[in-house]
Length: 143
View 1 (cartoon, rainbow, N blue to C red):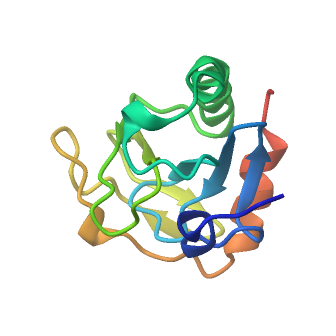
View 2: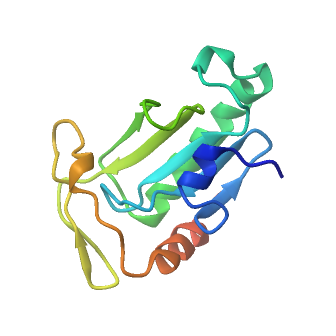
View 3: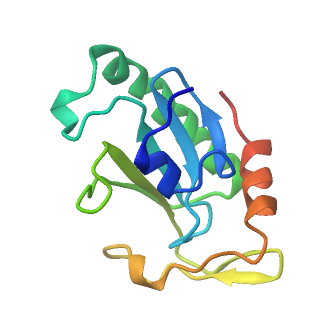
């Protein structure tokens, strides 16, 4: 599989949760909220309007899988998709499940510092066992 710099920046292949034909779902190493993901397009597009028709079509199924899987992993109150692409140019979304209470995983607390407003990406922490968190999210994947 061809990778792109954005996939590599977010730890591919070690953080891979699920690979699709046109998209990769990766665990976000810096967890702004518990279960935060990065959804990266495999196209080399740097503008959302430049991704392929097939990538657009597949996006519906991928987002459905993300939402059902994250809800199975840890019931969230809302979910945010942030498309920033200022530093990492390839089309991607930061997917943040949002919680109104502190979440815990492997004896570590993950508060949603921005709740109920804009997510606070600056408060993100890297789990002490990123692989265990990735495995837990993978085990809940529905697609």
